[in-house]
Length: 360
Image (cartoon, rainbow, N blue to C red):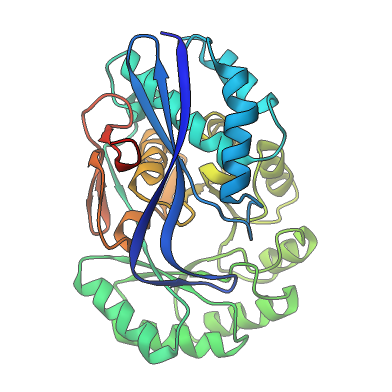
């Protein structure tokens, strides 16, 4: 089974509500889609969102990386030589992790199809369902409370609250949400690099003093400020999750060995795909550090690849894979089943998605 062609397309899906964080506001998923075809006629799909404020990748750079560097490097290679393909993929161009992730997941899709099994079973097979949180965007407090209550009514048991724009006012924001949803709902807080270390310590300590029972705080300080994040991790009781600070296995090792964070957030668009993400999982297993499987603002295609990894590995104890739930519609055929907070893996081989509008 040789790689015969790698094509790119585009998909635009409106969001049910604008997605707002400390870094950006987005109203549509507008992503690059990849199709890898083999000489046997088998097809694998991937997706890459242009998240320039985090990965540095734009739609133009993703297309260029795939069409001018990755495609020429991989054409004619055997899918069965997975490590060889992945080595060539990651050495064809530096950085450009989103472009690599899209091609990587398409290759893994084909590799699992080759052996007739769902991808999650091929790479670990730990579970066949994954529970995800749902993101509550940054908005005025009354709206965030209303959105949180609505999410709980829909069946979500885990909320990820976006903060980081208003400093200590975020404490009142979280307190209002906690009061509205009650003690039985898990609350995670994501600052998206929005605080300084001193602010983070002050804010998180205030949340602890109020007994808000926060599951974790994600990336409280800028990605490059590992010393600051280490100070926060040491000063507070609430677990700290490193997100934008972790792109590579080396980043994960640095954070684990220096105790800069308690938990690691793995995202395929940061690691460059499943191949490198599996290395982070192995390192986390060695050091006994739990991981979250996260996503950017991605549609069902890329999130399904991430869900397969989350289902495969025991060390991934949390999931933030709500991208499809934030979309107004699902344009794909096949793949895992998304039932509010529960993702049920499909028995179909590969990632399981068989219909992609960009290539219809």
